[in-house]
Image (cartoon, rainbow, N blue to C red; front, side, top):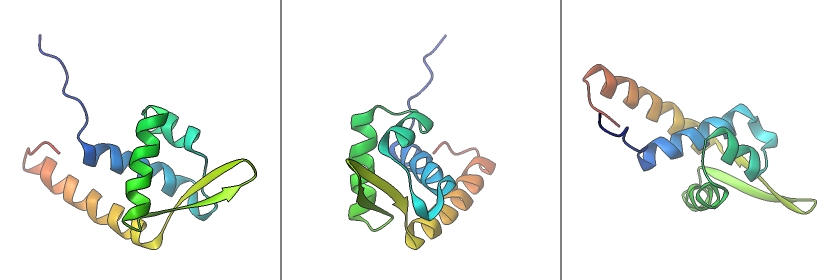
Length: 95
């Protein structure tokens, strides 16, 4: 019996953006993102920072922490990524 392969980075990014999309413009804290995307806190922070750098997410300070939200560009990217993933699965390509 072989081990199940780990998620790809694009899979993790997709999961993070889905969580952010579920929380809309108001955003959510990193703990919620990490838990719902099934990632460690550190990994979630690292990926969110990359998404912020690319303009797909935004971060703002709220009370003692940060709130992360998806941008318009992030919503568009997620939509295109989901279309691509569906096509790839139809062609039996793992992504």
